[in-house]
Every structure is written in C-alpha cells, then in structure tokens.
Image: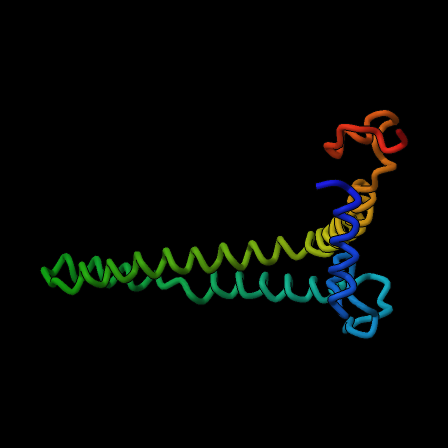
Length: 164
C-alpha cells in the first residue's frame, strides 16, 4: 500500500465517522476531576498514613488478643487422657495459628506499604503521561518526511522516486 493510498483511507474513515477515538486523552468536560493538576487519581499522604496506622493497630491487637495458647494446653491434656477430641482440638489450633499468621502478615504488609504508595502513584502518573503523550510522537513517525533523504521510497515500498 502506497503512502498516498494510506492517507486517502485515513481521510475517508475520518469523514465517515462523526466521532473519533482520542488516544491522547478525553475531553475536559468528560473528566470527573477536570482541571486537577495531579490527574484523576488523588490520594494524600495523610490518608495513606491513617490506613497504615489502623493496619498497625490491628496487627498489635491480633497479636495480643487473637492468639489462644490455652487451646494448645487443653489439646495436650485431652490427648494425655486418651480423648480423641485432643487431636481434633490440636488440629484446629494449628489451623487457627496459620490463618492468624497470614492475617497478621497482611496487616504488616498494608502498614508498611502505605509509606511508599504516595510516591509510587506519583511515579505511575508520570509514567502514564509520558506514554500517552508519546502517541503523538509515534504518529509523527509515520510521516514520510521522517525518512532519511533518498530512502523515502524504499521505506514505503515504492520502486520509483516521487520526484522523478
């Protein structure tokens, strides 16, 4: 397909569609936070710190209040007296400890992660802006004037130079 043919197809498609997709953004009137200098997503360090603090408090409460050491003692006593219930109680205790550990790990992860989230989102916003704005650069790369002199026709698969 020659470059001129491609340009004609693009023009024809644009003429047949009253609305076009915009890859570089949406109109200001359609943006929920139009005019926001930081983008659509907004989170403050104060909010993140509060979430992290609550996760830390929950971690400490779980450590103090959710561990049930008396269950292990009861399970051992029941086993020693020959009751099958002792083994079952021991199994429940082990499962509880594993699940409690998983929950406590999650609380610690949340607490620690909130310290870094604000900076990470700022970096994500910059990354997205760069990649979205590079679409115009990519589109410019398809302009025939971009090709090195004497190579324009080779790039687009034509055998003859246009100016001959």
